Every structure is written in C-alpha cells, then in structure tokens.
Image 1 (cartoon, rainbow, N blue to C red):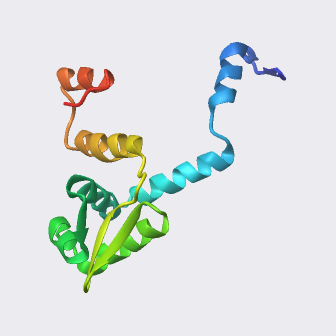
Image 2 (cartoon, rainbow, N blue to C red; image 1 turned 60 degrees about the vertical axis):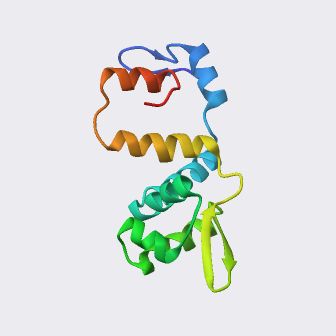
Length: 139
C-alpha cells in the first residue's frame, strides 16, 4: 500500500483499518446501482407509493391517488418508474390494474428505507426510541 505524506503525518495512519475498509466498501459499479435505487426512492411521490404498497399490499392507481392526495397522472408516472426499476409489479383484474411491491422486494430496504426513515422524518427520536432502534427493535 502506498503511503501518502502531508505536512502533519503519513497515510495510512491505520493500515489495518484502511485494508479492512477497502475490502468492504462497495465497488464503483455497486455504488452506482445503490445510488440509482436510492434516487428512485428520494422522490416524495415514489417513496410514498412504496410505503403505501408496503402497508396495504396492493392498490389501483385511483385508490393510490386518493391515499397520497395527488393526481392519478402523478401516481401513474411514479408507478411506471418503479415498475421499470423492478420494485413494483402489477396484475390486471378486468379493467382494473392493481400494483404491489415486487416479489422479493428486499426486506432490509422495506425496514430501513421505507418504515424507519419515514418514522424518523416525523420528528426527533427521544432516548427510548433511539435505544430501541439501535438494538434492532421498532418503536
């Protein structure tokens, strides 16, 4: 491992930790995929769509629009993007199309990106909630 010198000290300061971090840090390609998924979820309408589908399993576009209090066009557009990304699937019953989270939607993504981040955004955690979440529990 090459050493870098600045005016204060030589790098790496802690070669073992640097090596361990390098082994575990996602590759550039993995980082691109990760930020791609997170950017899909960073849109308020899409995040709320995923959350709603997680809560009730499946809904049609019109019902999702009512739940989110947005236009059917906004819901359709959000669902189209989520479906293209493989996060949402649909089934047709007569003339009604129902949407749901895709089979195999990653549970950690549900737990941490949908449920806990939404809950965290509702306000600051008190000490009991923080302790519960850091131990893997839910408030």
